[in-house]
Image (cartoon, rainbow, N blue to C red; front, side, top):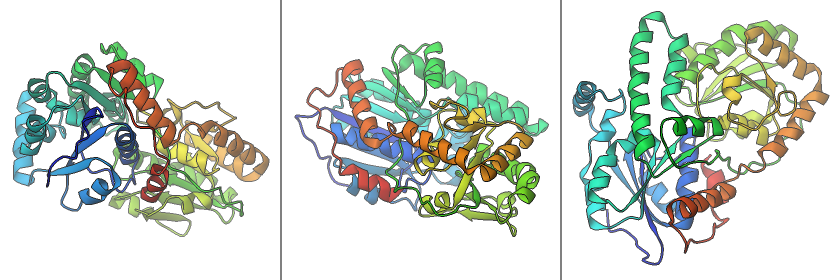
Length: 418
């Protein structure tokens, strides 16, 4: 793979990721890529990503000043073995594969000293004992996209009864891991104040909030809009639950009052139960190269999430695109909103339907929500996130006194991958 490009004048960071975050077509990928670019703009960065066969690590390597390497995820037999071993050791299901240390990680830790190791998600932080052993002076940083245990607990509440016991066992294992990481990490980043408080309560001494960012979006289209849109990765269970709730319980209540309107469900890897929702006034788009054309046709987005943590990039995108938002409290938590000013809150299907009909009939209200939301979302830019990350590394860890300034050239690249 070649050697590591090193600049001895700059502090060095090794970032470990559970996947290659390109294309940035999910909220998780977009946050991971934003953070990588923030680190790359400030430090000498080396990235190591667990990858699938179809992932394009070369595209990521070309995007960054530093180097990006990939290690392939284990095959089905090895994955089954690691999951079994993890179960015996009490590790959460789905996390275990990241606790087996590929040769490339050892090589990087042995061939060069890093000032900090940046773990993207708790999954990759399973390797922290190895890192401590091989690089005892390196600072350990976790970017916690969510409080993962909270998501699983919330999903369990609405899951079929026969699944709940297993899901709550999984949640307890994740909570133990998150508590361990709270004690061991030198710095933890969270998306919201709510998540920050959760990690502080687990024993973390240094937590900083770095909100999610959105790529630059063009000015919203002002042509007449007729759609209700839902955007989200459809291989994530909370989004599947929300899309089903929207199509089966909310949309039937309001479709007759929205003449000529349709519901558009947009997101990668829709399962059969989502695909089967498609009909004359329900479109299931699946993966799309850009989400903005769908937002441009929407008079509202409805987000009836019943589980989640962190903050929802789908709301930030809608705000930036000038699309009024109707959301549950779980969907909106962690964001700086005011009900009735930036968005409309709703919980039950009837509330969602009434809010959508209200926006359809009262375009003055819809325009007012869109205007206020665009003001609210203005600080959520990659450049400001990069400045915050650099500041926290410097102030909390004492790393990066000779940091490079953020380069605006990253902004077009971010937009191209969204």
